[in-house]
Image 1: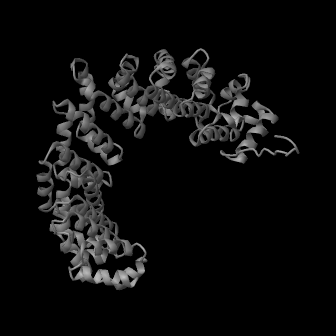
Image 2: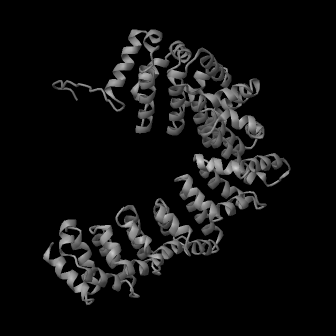
Length: 504
């Protein structure tokens, strides 16, 4: 360790270091390797620096935080919790946010360490302070606290500590701070519930999931809109879906959608409720969900057919999610002309709507039209072809015109549509017979930025990797595409120039 840093550290430990010396120490420590820090660092150094945090001088506190950040990172998490437990507790309730962030970051390191996490579980007071941090004004502190508690709950001992001790009361007390803090605790509960069926049982027995469900199905429309996002996260796991089904929550959500027709404020929560079913259908079974809850599909179509851009956007997103797998595509196909007509509207929106909705339409179209090679039966290929032709009278030209517009997001969105259909023989024939299309695909000069180059490369890769491309495109075009693929997305052709004497 640099001797200057040692001397400054000793002065800090004696608590007679001036502010300028603390600043100098902060700079000097940057050049000292972690191994050297560990070798010369004593408990008295750290204790003294933590003690300096109690000063009313903000500049001194700021300097000490920077120094402690550097020193603590060099130490093993087990050492930190065994020797600085009291300092961590004080740091978590310090008035300065920077000190809280420093301390909660150390807690984060400790809970990630299998050997050190048990030490935290033996300190109810420290756990209590972490829970209280969820109620802090600083979102960064609250998020770290949630992350740490979620990690602690990944062990049986952690679940016992949080839910079968006085800490459960602390958790409920902190919820009473404000609506925002209550939702933070719900977020934590959903995270813990997602780990395993056992974790969910602890959360359910605490009564906190029931409270969340109660708010979801209550009368406050704004609360509903917030809670449905968390319930959707809960439904991503098998145990979460099973719990929601057993408690009748899915039926209740379906009934609320049914009753939304007569609710003038339904636009606040309806998008979230429809998204819930869209996500549920994909992780479960699109056919079963749509058959059991027909109101879901009916509402999606209603929203898509409406004139409200917000509702259209949510419906388009949901159709994209629903149609992302073959079973979902088949469910949509069963609605026959209604979905075909809807595709025409989506194609129109992709061309004429405001940019954000156009992008959502392009993403949904890509999702709906993509078929993995192993699922390309004659029936499914006929279906995707008929869907494509329903989008517009000249769909290939529609997306080509979007791809030539000077807006990178739209340009890439259109390229993703081409990529989605690139491995399907009917699309390859359309591309081949569209004048100048293949030349456009291999033309690198039309891609102005990295995102565009990457998107074009994915299109070329999808074409080259298709088993039918060589036969349909012919050898000349196939070899040009393969050369493009081998050269990579950012290839620039070298241009040789010859100097001519006397030329200007």
